[in-house]
Image (tube, rainbow, N blue to C red; front, top):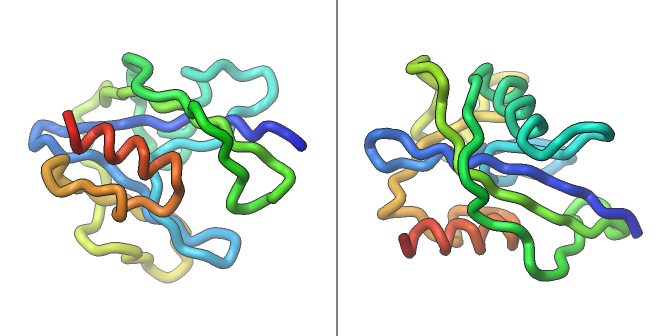
Length: 143
């Protein structure tokens, strides 16, 4: 068994909406928070900054640690992997507009990833695909 370390950012805008990532990868569609896998030799915060640049072309400041996986979670993509997820609050360093959509899985042609805002008042566990993201969504919706 291998550990798969994932780092995610919770970006909340001035309308009290959180950014979600709808993705179409590995033959399935899923919704998660923006972020991704830690690479060898990379720190957690550097990983998150890199992921936001890669996924959103957005420079972020990484804030407080919000959640660290505290239960066993097998990877949805590789049964040999155990997922360890770390969630931080993030803040955009620019006032740049993030390209988003209002519709779930609103992919254009060859896109594999789109982003959308959802109100924290409306956010629920059911909006997320994976168990750890569901737990974080519940924590955010109860704040």
